[in-house]
Length: 270
Length: 336
Image (cartoon, rainbow over all chains, first blue to last red; front, side, top):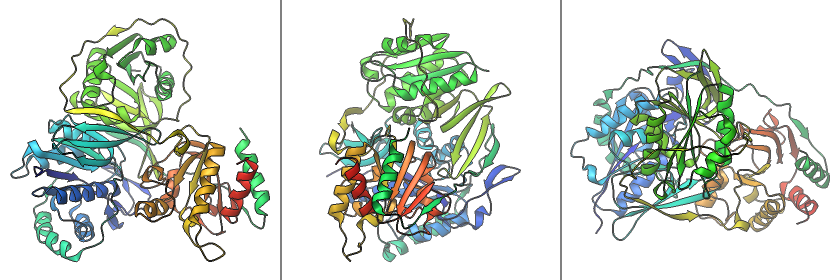
């Protein structure tokens, strides 16, 4: 039987991708206009990490999944109402900004401190999961700094597959250039894995899982420690929306053959 | 301008790949003193390749242990080079290898890191970085006071600098390979004739979920869709992208387009590739998808809906037509 894992997933919330976003500036730096009013979702890549974590825990009895999430408490509660129905996990909430303009260095410090403080954490079996980058800051740097703070030098980024082998080692597929995968074998935890999309579909909502999760999530939200991020030393000179709006030529009633000729001619232009 | 360290890893054979030469071109714009740091099993060929770049020093961590991309060894090598160079600014190409290792190195050195930089400029004697936030939906220019400041430059934003080659003097930085529990065992790559992702292709061809929907005769034609798309990719050597809805269908095991995976996905939760031209087919061009087209310069789309997202300023040309029919003719013209 496999030895259980301690799986900690780091993930926060992002604005729903269908929302129109506009930057706004304030005394503490840039933010999104009406940020607190925008509907939010769990960061998509962090979501994939969470589903992969739950799947691994299911296949490795005794494993535990904890989601460490830094975001405004009220928004976290809103997002957890949905996420809690997907897979079983325990929430560790930190009340702070989930803004894309927050510095990954400080975010990593807050998350690493929260992981260190987890009661009964067996660091020898620790797997730190998260999205390989967020859909807000998109830095792809937070997990590595969490790993460094926790003293973990086995790190993987752009992971699409983790397979626990017979002897307990882990085979890991990481995305690399040109649509290829690098295959590595990590002898044992602890390790940090930044997930890309993984191989699992989004789980269906399960109200029973939701009810069990929410019993622990609500107290966790009440216990959420404040985690302000100062963005020290970081200065935004400007934040703007792309201006490019194209003059679209809409071509109707052109025979398909003629369209094809036009497309091929365009492809052959330098 | 402060001293800049360019970090580059070598390819098998010891040469530098295009992203490293692009980073070199970007640094040239900043006008600071340049130090080059090389990592790999062989580094002299890379140093010779850029001998004429005007670097004050070329440092190298060389050895078999540093041949394979792996966090522990890459981070140790980069850390050693940074300490030897002592440069306040560290610039590197955003390869999968450096993207994995350098944020941790920035932490070890008490510095900061900014990734996915698309432009660099000098402001008051220091660099200012341009990068995108919220999946290419807004662009910011930022500066930092902390040093060392690491910047990873996205590929395709700068022309690769054609540096005069020559004989370079390399200063070896001694480093014992760190203990690691990770072994790189191989690379999984599609066969050459099955390859659908080509980062250097002139054209990005994107297929949307419409390819799997019922057609005019009331039935879906996934087999024909597959033949048309693969035929086009072979003939044009384009790179293939997919909308999230189409990729998700494939992931759910439906018999749709067997070659389409999450690696092909373009948009909010996919990639944002850089190609000079893009042709979208059977895709509605809604915002979460089109954010992945931010760096595609010339855009054309084929869709049956004249009011789709592409018509609203997202494409240069929208052909209101049946993509099956159009692509049949395109393939014939391309000689497939």
